[in-house]
Image (cartoon, rainbow, N blue to C red; front, side, top):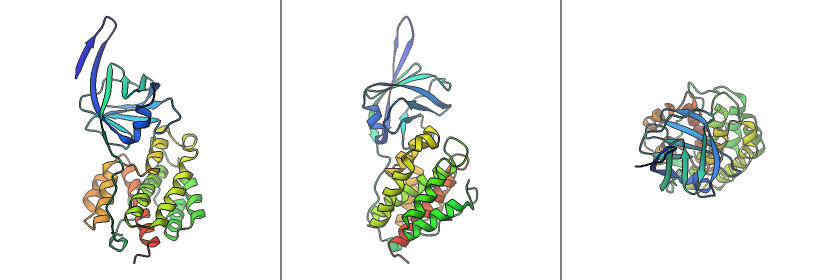
Amino acid sequence: MTVSTSARRTRVHVTGAASTAVRPVLESQRRPARVLAAFPAGVYLEVRTDLEPSVIAVITGEATRLPNSVLLSGPLPHLTVGDDASVGDRTIELGPLSLSVRRWWDPAPPLGRIDPARLEDDLPKDPPGAGLAGNGAVDMLASSCAKGWLLGAVTAAEQLVGLGPGLTPSGDDVLAGLLVTLRHLGAAAACDRAVWLADWLAATVTFDARTRTTPLSATLLHCAARGEASPEVTAVLRAVAGGSPTEPALRRLHRLGHTSGTDLAQGIAIGVAAVRSLSGAR
């Protein structure tokens, strides 16, 4: 960390590690941004751009590492919603902080080849605490994906985008968990039908996400459409694929947000069941 001083202000220069998901925005020309939300362990920046992700999370090690995150080792300055910032040229200017990206990390690590018959299928499809437990659209999504019925899956997905309160509505979290699972487990199990379904659902939920849900949730849907997720999500997928106990990974996932972790787990469960069904696994 270095500090430069001028007559007008003190600048704190730090380096960070960024998700490759945000590389297109960070490596483009500098654009204005604003603080969308601020917490002690992280801030969300909405960048004025047509690129995705249009929301970037600048976080410390105590925050959840979302797939659109830039991680810095030091503390964040005090910021409030609406504060100005800028993003681009591999740099984030945020209050007195000048953050330069030096390293990258992958939010979509692939799984190795797996036998779909060995996939654990004991994840609860309607877990306690899920924001949309018992919702008809979720039930329709699950049954349609298991059958590979595209019209039913797309219809249900359209009903779920933006459904629920908060920065990441429950409907979006369910869809994000499903998209990541279909893409990663489908590829690992060589289930082309699951990957095909993921492609269509991804196009459906991202088409007008910016106008139907919150800026942060729209960005996370775009990330999920590419298979990008937080480490808590990928840990559950690794457990499912490896046949190891899923309970420890699920406990960590469930701790995310108010219902976000449970909603993501619900989407993962729907995706696992779909990959098994579409692969002909029994």
